[in-house]
Image 1: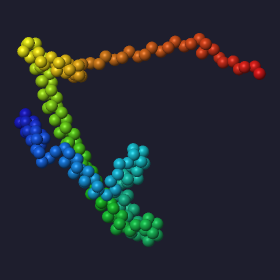
Image 2: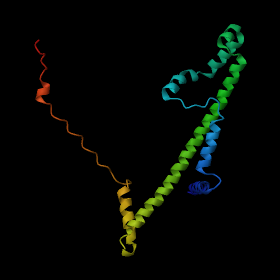
Image 3: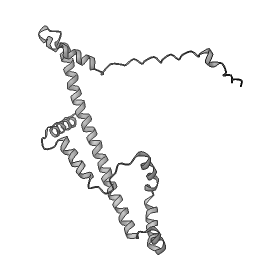
Image 4: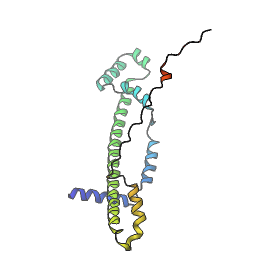
Length: 184
């Protein structure tokens, strides 16, 4: 229970910190994107076509780099030295760590937003519950239009009835007769 309270306190503090706003974080992320080499949004088919070759085992990669190192003909064909390939391998591994950290960060932001929305949702549902009780007292009649709007917009706890399927029209007798070819 204590951990949950600490987590909610941290969330509330971060949400209220004027130095960190969602807009400032978005601005920082956009600036960061411009610094990432080869940063691009690939269409799904293009990304899928790149996956197989980009997933070669590290052992295969090292064997290929050694082959480039061992043969000037292979190096000339590939157009890169063994050192260049090794540097590219290490860079890809380091950028993979960045990708993994960004995924963890995305998961954390997703959880933070979920927690914020949940806390807000609890407050809104409490508002609705209290307002429904208060409108029964004449001095709180000014809440009636608000309760009516909340009742109309509330999806929480309501089951939506499934629409019956549209009836299939009966086959037309004329349409089922074979078409005759005109005599010429």
